[in-house]
Image 1 (cartoon, rainbow, N blue to C red):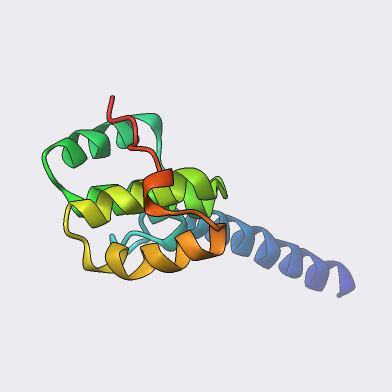
Image 2: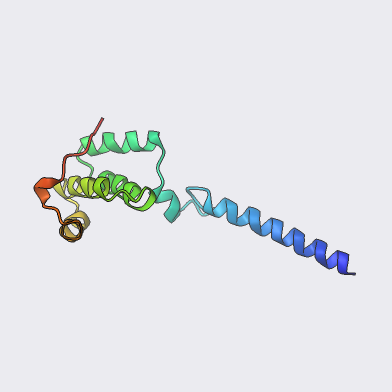
Length: 118
């Protein structure tokens, strides 16, 4: 009887592992909603597409790139650089967040370079 119980528990553990792996390692869940991890983690191709959108004036694209550098790479310098760009393009959220980030980093707006859009 113990071997059956152990086998069932192992099967449940394997199924749970596969289930959670699928959830946490895909950009979209089964309902086709982008997960938090998927939103922040970007491929090189996605970054290139977003940079193209930024060139066209898309502030949300700049915020997506900023969140990639901030949340995935923990690169505050590039994060704030892209937030500055989003603010320049009219993002209300970026305009609200930027002063606090600059203060936290001890920098002035003019200290932040423009991002490379290529």
